[in-house]
Image 1 (cartoon, rainbow, N blue to C red):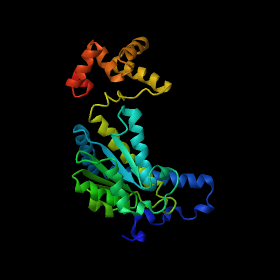
Image 2: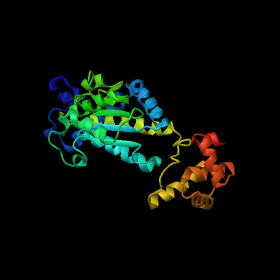
Image 3: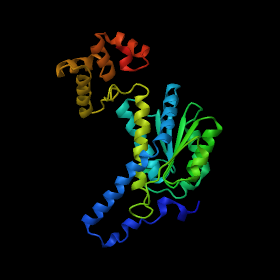
Image 4: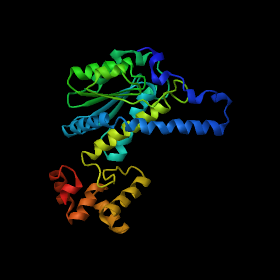
Length: 295
């Protein structure tokens, strides 16, 4: 597909003359464009659904969620993966983001990295991809060779594959079992896919990782009960979560938080079922780590 045929590369007729607009006028225009993104994502919920189901299935058999992309797309995957660790208390290996050019590419463009299919394959080989994993290729243009190379390798070894692109009839869609194509229209600033395309990708990544974690018991009602209390703010949030989940007072929450070795989910089960730490641990194992299965 030629660049001129990509929605993400077209000029936006609504934002001509940006350099002549006042700050207020540009703000209003940008906000109007951004409002189209959530609507565009809503139209693709049916294609996002199976990707989340496949992610949950992968987690349940000990597999991992692997994002891969270049530039902004790669950075968004790395960001989403990194945030799963404190939010859901998972090991960094469980959700990983691979970016063309490696860690250096998070802040500096690495020449030619995204143009190599071989680099995509090598990066997946480097993390020892297996058929239990799911690989999600992210590319606003829908044509990044690095992503295509990774998807080809993932398919060859039997891993589940999905894509997120911001153009219809994207090239990468042909290399995935579950393609997601969201069209939010031309960018506010021509070709700047860190804007509307990046926002669309972030919304979809939020859905995949969050609902995926809900599907394996990382959430109780709407509380992040596997949060990792790695700083003072998160320690206090952990105690508030215990209070909300059990309707106990602060002192009780703080007491059980320590009794459970600062494991929020364990403290909640101990309080709700009047169990010892060891009994609560067994209840969670028997209940497949869902709090509601222990009650």
